[in-house]
Length: 426
Image: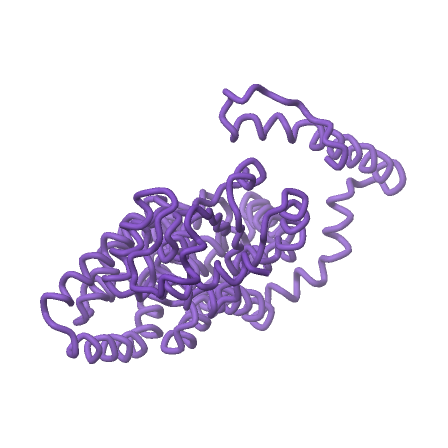
């Protein structure tokens, strides 16, 4: 890659296809090197390298499968997400080997007529820890939709109820918001941990088999739990117990937040409140559909800011219609800003507050020459050093946002424009 030895295709070929061919040579070389190393390892020790790694770390895997280990792993994953950092990207690499090996061991034990006892598996993470997405927020979304008195919360609940059934909840995390919301800090951390502890109690005390199969993470959690647990009778009991547990954990905090939102809404005219709730619901729906544009959700933004940013993005080089001073910000005319995040959903938050819409693709190298500034969302900030090298080579400004800063910018179009102005001036 350093010498740019690759397979080049004509410009008419879509970037996502041409990128595959660009990566073909380095991937092939890497595979060949590791295959050769594995052959040498097999000759020396009689087992493959992957099996050797598993045997070395087996004591750690065993410790991680206990109550304390599970709490540390999934508490940390939720904590990272709460501050705006993609939790699985940080935690999962350290436990991925255990997730796969434990699932395999459970299946082998079940085939041998023994109990499948391992808890730390990929399927348990998908459907128990992340029931409805990070934070086990499936039940909370139902509360937003059916129990909330706040019009804004009901709008958010209606917009997110279908996507969350398929574990797509990133726009909700930033749009409700859950991220950096002190009201939901305790249940957001506690619910995933208590869910996985409940699973361990069912396995250790009631004799239920642990997860033995795997399904895509987008499978609705209730269906995934029943199917991946092999349709055991106890699986149905566990599902009901887990939903009840999440309701009990979230409900007191939900009531506090609902009361706060109702107090805020009581100070707003009825017509303006209805319009704001409708706009936020529509923006949430657009974000869940992957439309990373000016129609995407902006958490907590006033209706005028949302409308202003949407109107500004309709023509290239225009400025935000949010009232700003004409002097300094006029220099942003014609500037382009690329916002990069993990999956494309949260980049819409900041893009909505900027006059220039932004999209997030894996093939950002091909896109970067068209922009003046690249902004990394908090959950993608770990890639800053590598991206900075590419940006410097192309003469493009590059920066990253902290979690709270990112949320503040997504709520204030003028502040977002000033942030861009400061970055370009450096």
